[in-house]
Every structure is written in structure tokens, then in C-alpha cells.
Length: 507
Image 1 (cartoon, rainbow, N blue to C red):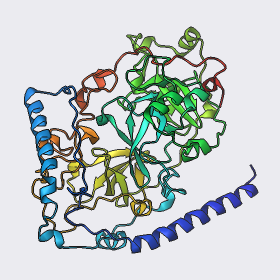
Image 2: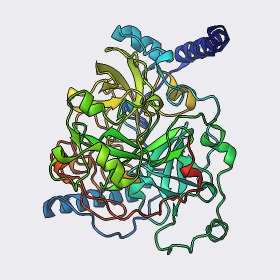
Image 3: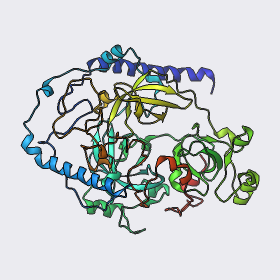
């Protein structure tokens, strides 16, 4: 494209950004958050009169580190049951301090902190203010990727809607495995998408392969499929990338970032690539685009004197040769021209934004960037100890500009200490800053009252997962064992696409 043809496009994008910034500025000035006993600095706590008692089903005990911890969890559950039973008798109780109100808004907060908001132009489309509303409703069915097993597509149900986010449930499995995504996530698809594109759909637990039928299932559940127009992926234009399923490359193992490994493009959907590490378990797979900093063309390690991790059958890495491996597997390399260079993210230390709390994904908090790397930023939750800081990819869909919560109708969790509010009796977590919202065992419980159930307690702080694997039931290992825990490849739950399937086409 000629330079003269590029100008109108850039100007148009600039006008859109400027218009959004003006809207944000006005909304930030008008935005106020009023902490009360029902909200608190850590977020909304449903009142007892509005909270329906949960039906706590008997489920098999999850594997724990010790019997004492299991007992502590059971005590925690008893407290939750007790609180739910007592709720109706305390619905009129209000503490004097809870009557105090303090207005909070981003404009005043930024002035007090003397720090800037991260500019809107630094955020990707999937991070910035949505151009359409969230149309999803509770009960709608859809298909989507299991984020813990990125190569699998599962039957999902919308069980909660918060602003522009939805909580999804794996049909047939405990709700402790529920997860949150934005309404425009490319990980979700309408009913029938798998059949149309040649992907294997994993049915709800209890169904045998070949027994599942969407029309029959929807009728049995008396449920509706989410309309196709609700999905961002339905309207995403596909642009050629030069990649094709089966091509080889070198890629970073994101669970063990020190490793650069032999990998394969195992699937292509819209403009995204599914990266699989040869002969390793599919749980290490991940989705990315052609500009991802985690993928490199074949020969990158050799050219830059970096150690390449070969497939596990090569006991001595020095014995691995790309030339002989390609010949043996009958495959070809992804062309170097297909790899795109991602521009610098532009984020700087001291910039403020809103971000999903990875330890408690139901919450979005006020954050400050404290460190930056080429492709990552380190987040600090305002008002919290630096002990809770962590790194996140600069293009993560969990990052949003200031004002995103206000514009989308999602609760924003204020920094601890912005209002002098005493916790409601029975809702006090001993961890500083925590108001008892959420639980290490997932959305099954909305609250916790002890350090055992707190996502921010020392015993739970560095755990990547508290739950056994949803499919295999394997117990999660401590984070310091991750490098040694790479599992060999297990049989893929779905067969490789046929030569004429949509996945095998060149993009």
C-alpha cells in the first residue's frame, strides 16, 4: 500500500481515539464510587436479604497438602453455611461507621497520587472500551476454549454477567472450575461452530463420544443458544498470515519461560495460532498471533547461541538436528516472513490502570505499573503490599484503561483505606486489605472468613491452582516443581483435522 493511502486510515483511527478519550474524561469526572457497608473498599458484598442460600452439594473432597488443611477447609464451609442461615435475622443491622460515605473518582485520585493514567492509545482493541454492549444473559449456551487445556472446545453456560464480563460454567462439572472472560473474547464461539469448522467438541461429563447433539441437549435443558451476533469472533475479518497447520517453529514454553522448544502450529482460527510443543502434553499449548514475542522461526536459537529444547525422545539436545527432524517427520518450517515484529507496548512505570486480579478473577482493581520489560509489565494493586505484585503480558485482555469499569458497569475495587468502614461482623478476613470476597476454591463460595480460604494468605499466595485438574484429576504441584513437571504427550481427545478441513487450510 502506498504511503498516500495510509494517511486517511491513521487519521480516522486518531479521531476515534480522541473521541473515546473525550468521553472517558467526562465519564471520569462524573464517576463516583460510594463505599458502604454493603460494598466496602474491596467490592460489593451481597446483602443477606438479597442473597439466596446456596445449595451446597456433596462433592468428592479435593486433594490437599495435608489432613489438617482439609479440616480447615471444612470448618470454612461450615462458617459459610452458618452465615447463610443467619442472614435473614441480620438484614436490618447496620454499623454506625457504615453510614459514612466518601466519594471516590479517578480524576481526584490521580491528582492526589500525582501519577498519570495510562494513555488510551496504549491499549489494544480487546483491552480498550468496547464499541458494543454485552448482550449475553445468564443461561445461554455456547462453545469455548478451556483455558487450562487450550486445544479443547467445550460446552459452556453463562452463569453470571458483570458489566462487559461473563462467568462461564463447564456443563457437567463442578462450578469451582468456572472462569471469567470479556464478552468480546475470541475464545468463545456460538453453538455449532465446532461442527462447522471441523473441530472436536468435548460434550458435558457423562456423554459418550458421538452421543451429544446440540438440538437435543438444548431441548433437554430447556435452554437457548447464544445468538451468533453476540460473538466478536463472528465478525472478525481473517487476514493471510503465511502460517499453516503442521508447520514447525521454535517457541517459548510460557509455563517454563526459560525454555525455547521445538514446536508446531497445531491449529489456526481466524488470525490466531495454537502452539503445541512436540510430544509434550497439550496442557502446555497456547494461543497467540503472528506478532507474538514467544514464537520464532526455525534456526533462531542457533543463530543467537540459545539452547533449544528438543522433543523428549532426544535425551541429548546436542543430537537434535532440524534438518533430519523435518525429514523424519515429513514437515516444513514456518516461513520467516510470516513472523511479525510487535511494536513496543509504550507503558511506563507509575502509570495507572484497571486490571483483573488473577488471584480473585471476579474482581477488577485499581493498579499501578511498577516495572516494565520488553513485552510485560509488573502490576501493583494500590493500597496492597508489594508482596502481591506480579508480571503480566502487556497485551493481556485483563488490562483496561481507567474508567473502563465505570463505562461498562463493572464494579471497581477501591484501594484499601479509602474509606473508614468497619467490617460487618462475621465477614472479617484476617488478611490485611482483604474484605472476605472470593475463595481459593473458586466461585462455589462467594466469601471466606479465614486465611485458609483467602486467595491472599501466605499459604495460598504462590499457588498457581488450588484445584485438581478438571479432566485428569491430577493434583497441582507447587510452583517450584513446575520445571520438572513437564508431562509427556497424552492421546489427543480429538483427532487431527482431515486434509480438507478448515484447520488444514493455509492462512
